[in-house]
Length: 344
Image (cartoon, rainbow, N blue to C red; front, side):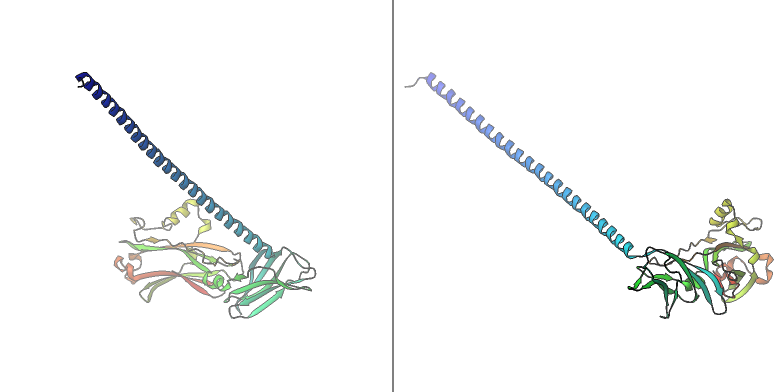
């Protein structure tokens, strides 16, 4: 029989073996967990790096597309510029014939090149399809001009054509558009501001407009009338040409006051300034098409009309603050050629 000592030694040995095995197993598990964690983290790092690379590739692709687009646009611009043989083109209104409603128009052009012996023509077509042309009359010159009478109530499309022994070619790549009807009818007078109001003492108006006479004799403003209406009925009318305020003659301070809707004319005691409903300033922007419209130079004059009507001074009109929304006031601008336009 084994002694108790031997049994104890065997038990201790077995425990030590079990402990070593457990330690080894623990280390293996820890190593496995560490390896898996390392692999997982490494995979995340690689995924992030891959996404960064993909983002950089995408950004690079976008930059290349933008550069490519810019290059294509610049090449197109260069091609268009090369195809356009006109360096500069302008026109001016230099004379008016009120009897047949035509305006003498002077064209001026600078060319980039010209065929030897070639003759240059300004060829126009109106909205009715009627064409007319005039030869420049200057051979072998790069800069020249010509004049032509055009109807004021028409718009025109213009081409610059050169004819030579080698054939005919259009010098301006895109046609020019001359909007005479807008210039002489629709834009001859343009409203720049419009306001008005009333209080317990008076009714007042604050209007601004500009006119363009293009520096032509006999085409300027002859008379301006102020008209007040009640519904459809005209209740007051007055020639106010001498009451117009020339904007160009105002000081900087006065212009600031005008822009703020303040009154420069004499106002009654206790006027109290502009009411909430007084001024609705309107700034009109040019509506010329952006294509190839060429704007003639002109002589623009800007005016302000302000009028304060104290109720007691106009007893025959029987006006009061309650009637403000029924009343309206506008200007009638009459020109030296007999035509007239309203400014509301």
